[in-house]
Length: 171
Image 1: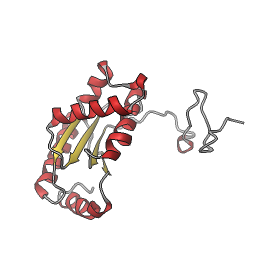
Image 2: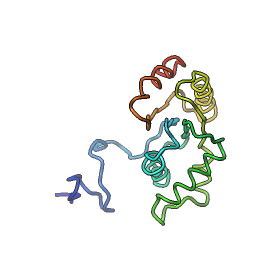
Image 3: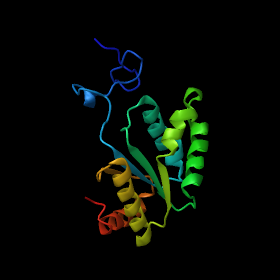
């Protein structure tokens, strides 16, 4: 009988990490389809403490697609380079010592990060998001494979969804 994580009751792999029962029977743990992940509210606490470290950990483990992009979308004013530096600083704070951003792994991750300073009520910013995603489709082969994560107050969910639909990003 396989070991089990006492806290979660999840089966544990030989390296001591929890296994994913939803992936049981699949040929590989690696995700292969290129994608763009858009994080609404990317300058907020949930993103910096939980989501960004989780995505970076997936990159370090090799479980992100070979071609992926991380797009931040929030009100705080950053350009792409400024947001990359913000991400590096947050990973320095919230990643374990053996996983701090450095070297080639960080450089590969950082080059895939972009940012849109946005007002969730302004349709122009969603048009800019559409252009960025189309650029990722061309350059990374993401082929319309886009993930939207709303790390925002629930009160703005309807507005974001409305603007995604208007920009034809709901397909």
